[in-house]
Length: 416
Image (cartoon, rainbow, N blue to C red; front, side, top):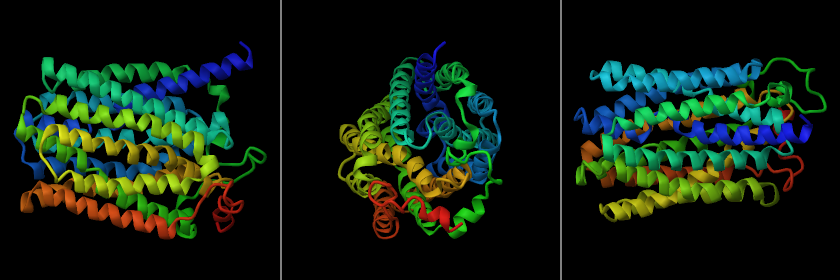
């Protein structure tokens, strides 16, 4: 097999991995809220609490997961094991009813899922190198969103025919697909030194990574972590809240309509990820990031205008812009700010923990506001938090693209 054929196989394998893993990496997501509400008749606060427990579990393991991916050369095996744990934990839910057991399964799922982001980023960087990383990350996100859209569409159809439990078995099928895809990625194609953020010219001659040191000494990275945390504090609870509103309007249609919301957003995310991957090197990272952050407060404010399902679906399209740009640019900005340090995946894990903190607190906060003041108050609260995130991003995070500033990406590494 010649090099061109091998490269093509690796490209297609990464495409398949991101497509199939899309339905696995976030566990049940908003479908958990629908399942607990529709099948077990849980209160919104209890649903929010179990989702918060899972998010906190993921939060505590993000940085260690990044360190694991930095150190191991068995990155593909880690992805396989994590996918099996996530799916197995979710498949147990139809046989569980107590809060404690449900929370435990979702915590296990969240802990296992914490390795996916750094593993995919590391495998990608190790294969492409830093120069082609931005474009390939955009392509990764494109197939990730396409996989989410396809899975949500199938979940909506199967849930209509067989009930909410159908989403569990769909996840099992997607897991098998992701295992096949990652096994087809050539292990020899991954440069594990480059994959952890060392420069290709000097890889192999550095010490061990130190995520704590990066976070304490790299001010742009710190501010970016704060912005990411606030973004996810505002964003994580929005779709689950929409799902609960849809369930109140029509319980039978709740899962199919939630799937429609997800499909609509994911279809918008596909061109957004392509745009970020194709233009972030030329236009810079910050303008695209600011556009993504600005959409979130607008989306939160628009949710309160109407409870009509088609209005909520239309507003959900805006999530495709914000999440599509953020998802494609997040690992690129972290790579820019840590290039040459050999600490890329530890830093990616630490920042994932930062926005994981926001995501962990979001459902609980939103659930409490809903019970105290209603759904509209919860949406407006989340919109206000998103506005703060946008302002902080504008004021504190510099452009990291080397196109705009030759020293922007290198300066943080010099401060370590």
